[in-house]
Length: 145
Picture (cartoon, rainbow, N blue to C red):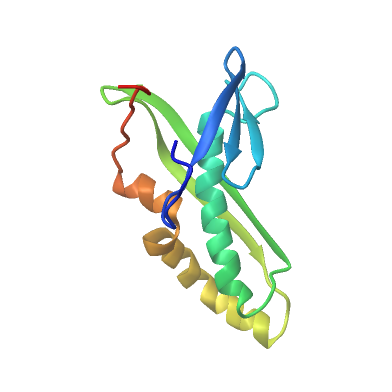
């Protein structure tokens, strides 16, 4: 991995910590342990769902936050894991937002803006969701080759 990063590059490193267990480290030094999903740590599939929901939630929070801080904002994400001719993958990914706004004119405006914010995130803003929807190729290389 290069020691210099462009403004557009995003990267994380994974190091094995045990059989089927890894620690991810981001460029800022944050860490996250992950595994196969047989304990409390998140599995890679769960992390993908977290990334989709988290990216969209942050977009929506920023967009409605220009008007008012929501009283409550939570997102449930679910998907079906299938195996078919295309291999293992997720289908039927659904995000369900539960958002509560304060009473008053600012809350009224935020409630009106909310559907548009959800669409903007889905159709343009959320990098994670857009990458999944568009279908970006992933290259796998062996170091030294």
